[in-house]
Image 1: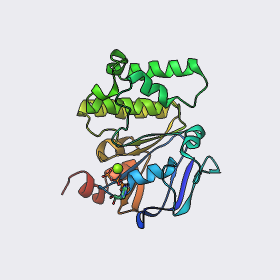
Image 2: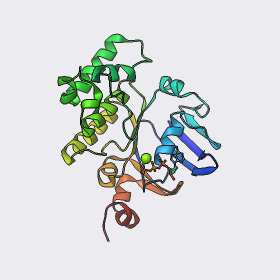
Image 3: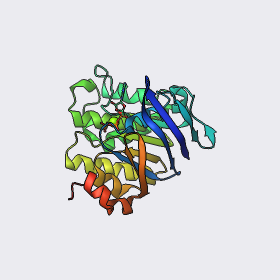
Image 4: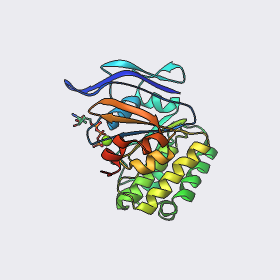
Length: 235
Ligand SMILES: Nc1ncnc2c1ncn2[C@@H]1O[C@H](COP(=O)(O)OP(=O)(O)OP(=O)(O)O)[C@@H](O)[C@H]1O
Ligand SMILES: [Mg+2]
């Protein structure tokens, strides 16, 4: 479904992503692990059309995606829940969700998906008229994920969705991700919580300083000594 080939992305003259190649198959959950500054968010931003490639290619459903403007990327069926949330703090929960659906032309479907988000995250439903900025960090994270779901994407990219969440809420988010996959949404999941992410993932890639060091099935990576040492806190 998504193919990234030899992708290089830079900020000014500094390459943050140094020629990475990876694939996400339709219906899969693929996770990307990496230490701080490895280039994970940069990779997602490039796929979303927010950053230009220095070189390389991105293909989505057999068509070229790099060079496509960000709003068109959304129309092609890709949504991103960005790191650090990027909500509109003065707008209500409901209006933030509506913005996630701005490109859609099926009001009844939008309504249904909004009710879905409220079912998933009841706190958002109960306080739907309140400004997003009043919510706790974890609650805003739920809203950011909800907003990304509102475009009804084929490919949902989540940048550290468990960040700032309690262990219980992290479990809820991970269960939600699995449910979305079961409904046919393909997921690209960036996480620091390697245990949770790899338990879900069909496949994982480990990124270090802008390069993919290795990749394997989620199950194999969970048992991999390098992953255990670097991400699971084992000696
Ligand atoms: N806007 C920017 N301008 C300049 N350099 C940047 C910018 N954003 C990121 N970088 C640099 O690019 C590299 C990759 O950053 P990126 O945010 O992609 O890392 P990450 O893997 O998402 O890290 P984290 O786990 O901390 O979120 C880092 O060295 C970072 O300092
Ligand atoms: Mg990041």
